[in-house]
Structure formats: structure tokens, C-alpha cells
Image: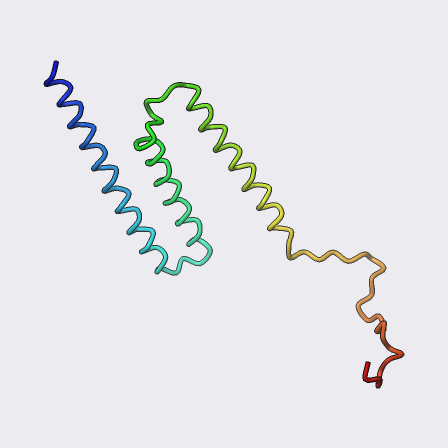
Length: 121
């Protein structure tokens, strides 16, 4: 009985060390990717690595893989809520540079202050 507990504890320690080494490697990879010019894919690569690292932390260090179903439902709902917030932010961001003018708008309208031309005010 004591031997099986010691083996399970050693296995657990081994898994934690492997996850820690993987996190260190992913951190080095994130730093390396930051120095490579991938154009718009730099952000995608960094986010993909960050999602992988976050999932390792949640699964192993926060013990989500051995947790109850209610905890897993809370984690899934939190991820879903995060995706909703990112989606709403992206719809706002994607429409920022669009300037829509009414059809009656003219770009060559006279200045509002045309009567003040030549005036110091």
C-alpha cells in the first residue's frame, strides 16, 4: 500500500516536472517567435502558444482534469464568456476605420468660418 502511494506520488512529481519543462520551452518559443517577422501571423502564433500554455496550467496545476463535472462546466462557461467578449471586441475593432458619410455630404463644403478669413481670431 505504501509503495503504491510512493509510486503514484513520484509519477505525479514527474508529470509536474514535465509540464514545467514544457511551459519553459513554450516561453522560449514565444520569445523566439517574437523576433521572427511573420507579419500578421505573429499575433496568431503568440496567442496559440499562450492558449496551449494556459490549458496546461488549468489541466495540471489547477487539477481540472481530475475535478468534478460542475467545475468543468464552470471552466467551459468561462471560456465561452471569454469568446463572447473577444467576439464583441473584434466586431467593434473591425468597424473602427470605416467612416460612413451620408449621401448628401459634400467634401468641398465652404468653411464655417469663411467670414473670419483674414481675421486674427
